[in-house]
Image 1 (cartoon, one colour):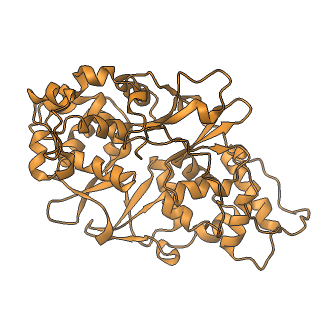
Image 2: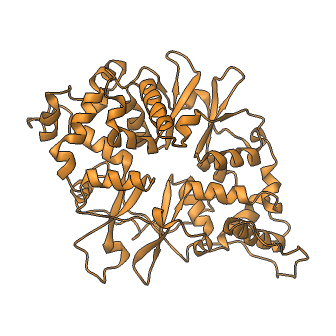
Image 3: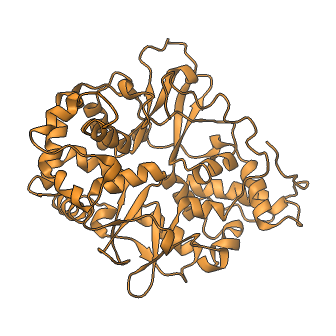
Length: 426
C-alpha cells in the first residue's frame, strides 16, 4: 500500500510529557510524524501519512472480556448468554473441527452477532412463501400456538400486535433456539464473514475499514499463533481520539464546527428511522439490511426524536423477554420504555437510560468526540431547538473527515482475508 513520503526526521523540541493513557501515547506517535512531514501536504494528506506509518500492533490491547471466541458447536441460546454477559455485540466463531495447527483462515469461520441471531430465529417463524411448497418450519409450528407468525418482509404498524411478550417468550423457550448450533447458521444470509487485520497492517487500513467499509469491530490476528490477539472496536477508536485532545494534529480540525467540515453528511430527509408505533422488529430489520448500527425512533407522523435503538439492544429481545411480557404489542416506543425501566431497576448505566444523545449544529468536532466517548455511544443526532432531527453523525462520518482512501489503496487486500463457508449466500 502506498504511503506518502516523509521528510528527514529532526530532533523535536517538543517536551516529552508522560502520556495520560496508552491512547494518548498513540496520539503522540501521530504528533511525532506530523512534525516531520512535507510542509506542502494538505492536513488530510498529512494525517493519511501519519496513520499509514503506524502499525495496528501499536493500538492498546482490548480488555480480556472482549477477546471472546465462540465455538461452532455452541447453541444460539448459549451464544446470546455469552455475548450478553461480556457486554459485546459479536464474537469470532471457531470451527471445532479445525486442527490444532490450523491457520487463522481455517480456524475462524465467521462472526456471530446479536442482531444476526435475532433476525435468523425470527425468519424461522415466518409462514412459507406462497411460491414455495414447503411446509412451515418447526420453529413456526412451535410458536404458532402462542403467537402469530411474523413476516419480516412486510412489517408495519399492524404487525406490532403479532410481537407481544408471549411471542418472544415462545421463541426463547423453543427447543430449536436452545439446540441450534452457531455453526448450523454458518453461510446463511444473516452470517457475518470473518475479516481480520494482521498486526503489521497500518492504522490507516483499520480506520478505513471502520468507516468506508462499515465494520463495527475488527479482530487482529497473530500469524504465529493463528489466533485473535486484539479486537479494535468503534468505542476504542472514539476513546483514542478523545485522549488526543490538545495535540497539534487533533486541534487542527477538532476545534472546527461541524458545519465547517461538512457534517452532518446525511440530511434529515435521508435518515433511516422508525415511528414509535411501528414494531421494534422493524428497527432491527432496517439496521441489518441497511448495515447501520442504530436507528432513531420518532413521533408518529412527525420528525421529533424520542429515542434511539442500536444493534446492542437486540440482546433484550432474547435475554430479558420478561420485561415486556405484559405488553400486547412491542412497538418501538414500548420497547424503549420497557428496557429503560428494566435498566433503572437493575441500576444499569446505559444510553437507553439517559435517553437520546443529541447536539446542535454549532458543536465542534472535539466536543462531539468527547460527548461520544463519555456516553459510550457510536452516533449522535443533530436536532434543532424543537428537537426535530436535522442529521446524524457516526464514527464513520468522523473518520471520513480525518482520512481518505488513496486510489488503489487496498489492492488485493480483500483476497484471502474474507473466507466464506462453502454454502455461503452472503
